[in-house]
Length: 338
Ligand code: NAD
Ligand code: UDP
Image 1 (cartoon, rainbow, N blue to C red):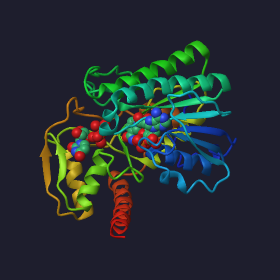
Image 2 (image 1 turned 30 degrees about the horizontal axis):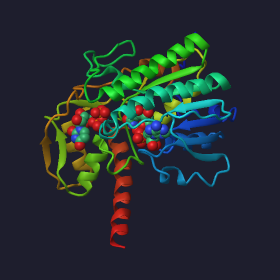
Image 3 (image 1 turned 120 degrees about the vertical axis):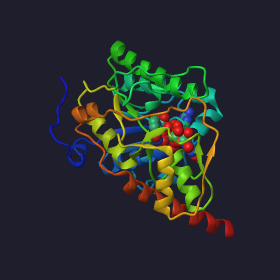
Image 4 (image 1 turned 90 degrees about the vertical axis):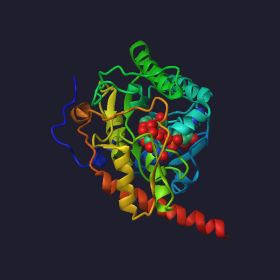
């Protein structure tokens, strides 16, 4: 039976403090993974952060290493591993298109073998395993907004296929392990999420626009900029995953997790320029192959099953992210002068 939460409560902190867990966060040194590690520790859990540092950084979790309940392990999730855990977050995978297209075969294998290894560990330990799936499973969607029942429109042979098909295959593995071996799974389909700890050179739209605007450089819109995205602030997304991990075992998902506030890329560029007070020009570069033209989550399932909805408006989230990148740029400029 589905759990119905009548209202959107501000935080799950009380519930998440209930039973301390030993949690493995694959990809824990990345953008989302590091925020998740932080939240889990704050909730009283013990955390093992496993990462091969392909796109993540030790600095992202350096502030947590003084906590005796936190451990960083250098681990490629494509290789076998073993930990005694009660909860696994499988967040290891490059996520930015330039990152995941740099080594497409490696990306696909990270999704597929990474899922098998996480699921095998869950099967052995009885742990709950949470998958960071993606809106990319819908490809260039012909249904708008996207509901979880939509089966998608992915080009399997295009340059995004390594990521999209890898994530789709991982979902298949999650549901097969659930049906065949009774593994307790949660599959969250993440829509574009942004915030502090994205890399300066990450290549995703929010980091690119903010860094370009802060440096008064040309802001690069790919194509005409009429394609849309719906942007979620990182704290909201992490809150959703904290709830999902605590939800009862019938709440397998898939559940869309994102902010339905949709914006054309060109308007995002204008908004970032305004918020930074930048003198940047907005320039158009060639459109990206297979770039989804529109993307917006239907989050009614997340509201119903997790009692969750995003709370941080785009301008507030962008302002926090701008402050982060501003400080990061000042630091790297000071380092360069030394
Ligand atoms: P990120 O690149 O910052 O983090 C990914 C982390 O995984 C990095 O620390 C990286 O070093 C690690 N990693 C990559 N390959 C690995 C491997 N083979 N073994 C061990 N570690 C490995 O990206 P992110 O935005 O934090 O994304 C985290 C997860 O969320 C990814 O699985 C991504 O597909 C998913 N996701 C993110 C978004 C988003 O908007 N941020 C959207 C949809 C899905
Ligand atoms: N984009 C852009 N300029 C950039 C980076 C991205 O116009 O410098 C566009 C990109 O073509 C896409 C959207 O912004 O339409 C989101 O891109 P991102 O790489 O952040 O994520 P995606 O949703 O494509 O995985």
